[in-house]
Every structure is written in structure tokens, then in C-alpha cells.
Amino acid sequence: MIHVTEDSIDLDAVLRAVEGDGEGAVVLFVGRVRNHSREREVTQLDYEAYRGMAESALAELAETALRDHGAQRVAVVHRVGRLKVGEAAVAVAVSSAHRPEAFETCRWLIDTLKEVVPIWKKERYSDGEEWVAEHP
Amino acid sequence: MIHVTEDSIDLDAVLRAVEGDGEGAVVLFVGRVRNHSREREVTQLDYEAYRGMAESALAELAETALRDHGAQRVAVVHRVGRLKVGEAAVAVAVSSAHRPEAFETCRWLIDTLKEVVPIWKKERYSDGEEWVAEHP
Amino acid sequence: MSNTETDSPEVGRPDAQQCMHVLLFAGLAERLGCARLTLNPPWPVTVAELQERLVSEWPELAPVTFRTAVNQRYALDSEPVQPEDEIALIPPVSGG
Amino acid sequence: MSNTETDSPEVGRPDAQQCMHVLLFAGLAERLGCARLTLNPPWPVTVAELQERLVSEWPELAPVTFRTAVNQRYALDSEPVQPEDEIALIPPVSGG
Image (cartoon, rainbow over all chains, first blue to last red; front, side, top):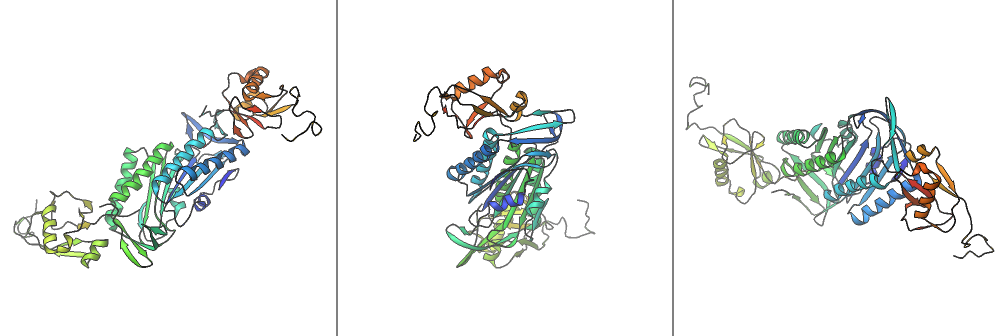
């Protein structure tokens, strides 16, 4: 399950996507919209993606996770569009036979996603808005 | 939410228990019953707990996580009784403002739980059964 | 110690005998065939002394690794045990 | 290259002129006021030459950090660009 979607993220479906009888460990990361950022109050967030490239970049990360990082199953869903405080923007789930691989792969996936996948967020505050440039 | 329970674990409830508008990162670990262990086929698993001590040990770990590890909210649910392959035996959820703390605290909680919390599992195979002694 | 001899004549008497229960779990309970041992140590007693006494009365415990919990916390060997304490033998845990 | 001159007379002619589109996103699209630039480079052209040309035609790009994607993959500066390639300028990402 590798998606860029306008819909709200179904975390249960993300968890189910990595279920398998041989996998004893599941690690899920959820990135949610916070109510503040760099000392300003965030009211909502707009996510924009270069969708085709974002999905193929995510698929490539997932393949690497399976091939090189000891993960058994991987699911990544990133939401785009306008999100409210508290909503999930991204979910990354990884299953593996044992827990170190699941933790390390999940961490690697979200770290790498944030560096390379062409998705951008604009924070909206009570008094303005700003594109966030986290990884120049 | 710190529980030792006979009921099946509601992962959605565990995730909701660590939700907060200031927490941008959630990491959930789920330990599930695998269909094999040390090269034998597992048919089911029995978990036994010294319940009072297990719950107070978990509460103490959660407190340490909040005080020393930068977590904002913590939930831990461990199931006891008879479990089938694929069922969740334990769920640990941690939220924090940023993701490193959520990953590290979740990992620390499950690692420490497996070392100190008085819960035991007996694996049942097609041809026998055995108490698992993972942390002597 | 605000107890007086008239409240409870046994408290404070070094030779007072009082039965205590020790909880067993998992493989340890199976090995000994019961979930609770009863023993009658001379008070006062430390965790280490209690362990020695348990092993001498139940030799099946000798080859077994276990930690001792007093009132639901892992205890040090030097810790004193009171008659009213909840004692448990904790074999290697395998939760998660 | 199985195309022949008769299939498409412009392919393979070094001086062939062909319009290309460059996709913009997020802050970059906002800064330039459009999500797509059109330019008319002399073919063949590399990623680095294309970047130079873009900056000289749209000076607003000069202070901006961006990577260039060719056919939805990050491209090296030395990579050649074909007229039919999908080109995009990728400002610093901030997903997750």
C-alpha cells in the first residue's frame, strides 16, 4: 500500500496492510498536524505533491526497505490537500520477523521520505502563511 | 492507558490514547504471535502475568518515559490468556512533539518491558509446548 | 514501631514464628506443581536468607534462575522481609 | 534510436528547436506566479545548461534552491534532456 491521497488516512487499513503470520513485529509511525510550529500557532496545513514522482519515489523507498533493510511488508500513505490540527498527514508501517528491523526500517523510511519525496507543506497561521522548507 | 487484559487489543483505542494537538509524532509498536519460533511451528500462545506487579511495572516504565525520554503521552496494553497466530500480544504507543523522541521512547519501552515486566509466554506447537525464557 | 505487646504479642519478638506464602508463576509453578509455597522462616529474614531456605526446602528450585519480588517490586538480596510482605519468585520473563 | 528522418524530420537534427515545459511546485510556483514555464532551448541540452537558461530567463529563480527532476527522477547536472522529457523544478521538500 503506497498512496498519495486527498482522503483522511485509515490507520487500521495501514496496519492491516503489513499483517502476515510470519511477522511478529509491527512499527507504525504517524505524523500529525501540530497546533504550533516555530513558536507560531498553526490553524491548518496545505500539502501539495508532485504526485506521480512522489508515488514512484515512495515505491522505490519501499522496495529498498524490503530488499536492504530486513522489512517483510511496508505501507506508506501521505495525505495532500488541506488538513486540520490533529489530522494524520503521513503514516508509515513496517512489519518484520523481529523488532529491531521494524523500528529501524520505519525510522529510515520516514527520515528518507522527508528528505527526498516531492511533497511540500504550507503552514497557515492566524496571521499569515508560509511554505516550509525543511530539506534544502 | 496502562493495561494487562484478557481482551483482544484495540489498536485504534491505543492510538487515540496518545493523541494531543501538540504532538506531531506517534510511534506504535505491535508485537504479534508468529506462526513459527526457533524453527518450530507455533499453533497458539499462552500468556501469564503476575498482574499487579506487571501493571505497576508498566506504570513505572511509562512514568520514566514521560519524565526522562521526552515522550508526551504513552499507552501500553499487554494481553494475557490464550492467543492465536496473528493476534496482537502487546501494543506500545508513544507521542511526542518530534519524531526522534517518539521512536526512541517506544523502542526503549518495548525493550525494557521484555526485560523486566513479569509476564511469561508458553508456546504451543503441534507436538508439544514450552515456556519461553527470553531474559534470564 | 508503635505496636505494644498487648496489641499483638508476636510483633517484635525475634523468635516469633509466622507462616508466609510465596507466589510462583509460569514455568516455576509448573516445575513445582503449585502456584504458592508456604514456609515458616525464623524472623527477621532477608531476601537472600529466604531464597536459601526456599531452595533447601524445595530442591527443585536449585537449578532454576529466578528473581525475588517483595510487594510487587524486584528486591535486593540484603532487603529485610516482613511477615505481611507479598513475596513472589519471578522466573525469566518473556512478555512482549 | 529507431526513428528515421522521414518519421519525424526534427529528431536528430542538432539545431532542431522544440518548445519544452517545466513544472513548478509549492513556493516556487507561487514565487513565479505560475505552475509551468515554457522555454525554447537549443537542442541538445543538459540539465545544467537548462538550469542556467531558466535562471537567465526567470531571474526570480536565481536566489532559489531547487533540484531538477527529469521524468520524475532527480537528475544529475550532466544528464542530457530530450524534448519529450518531463522536467520539474523541485524546491526543498517538506512532506511528512
